[in-house]
Length: 365
Image 1 (cartoon, rainbow, N blue to C red):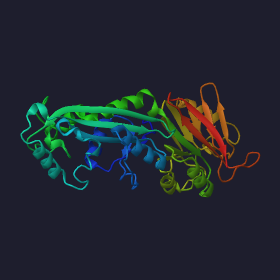
Image 2 (tube, helix red, strand yellow; image 1 turned 90 degrees about the vertical axis):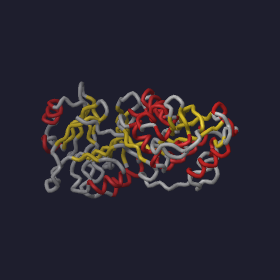
Image 3 (cartoon, helix red, strand yellow; image 1 turned 135 degrees about the horizontal axis):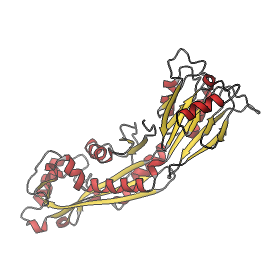
Image 4 (cartoon, one colour; image 1 turned 90 degrees about the horizontal axis):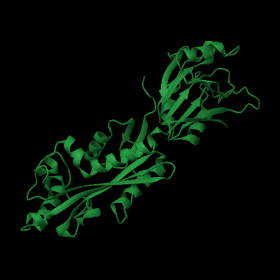
């Protein structure tokens, strides 16, 4: 059974060659890695830091503040010792931002003409920054040592890769296989170090789930709530959505899970679903299938039969957050036709913390 909480991470780059490396390193994590283009972001970022780390932080923080999502960014470059560690943090803009790398590489090799191997030492440096939605910043650094070659070699890389000779492998960085390059490259090392930090600190355990019910296609309050609480990792609707799930999913910017309410019989939704949210097994249904207007016994029995940790349901339009001995009972009430005392539209936020523990907050409009 799949865990529905797949976290979105933005990597603040438009470089598709770089994104290919990044996705290979992070492919075994339960994350969806988006480039700036994937996320539709065109923000111009001024990189005026004095170090690789400062520039990476500037990029990550800028995009996190715009999107509210965990954002990674890197700043990387080539340091050539004979050239006083040029181009360094200016590697992308070195010799002109729009100058083709083939031309840049040729100029660098010409500047090192006649320089012996022992003085052609160089390294690729990569600093990666993670900007968390709570404002926390994390950084890692990776390097790979080598020297500048005498000609461009290889087609597996980009940028300065064809002139960066790696003595350990007897070839240029652009001649390394993608798998080997990710193992030994500066970016691969920094990425794996960041991946380890994120996992160790439980950052990827965190999630925010919006739980609603009984909106009956009157979505004004729902859209207000979505704008107030975005971004969320998942939206759960406990029934009587009445066929508006696709537009709600687009507005929420996250996946949506829906079950059939008593007014959803034309839409083909399942009566119930069972899935995992992190370590919790969830039984999702609409209460009318279990006679909840009279008693919750059938509902609880159905959830226990699925060995669920949490049951989420709708129908009665009255919110409920109750911890039984081995079962958490969740009803978000209704955002459209509330029936509890005070008649305030209601919803529930499920926050999962770094330890993977869930916390439920009942909120009212």
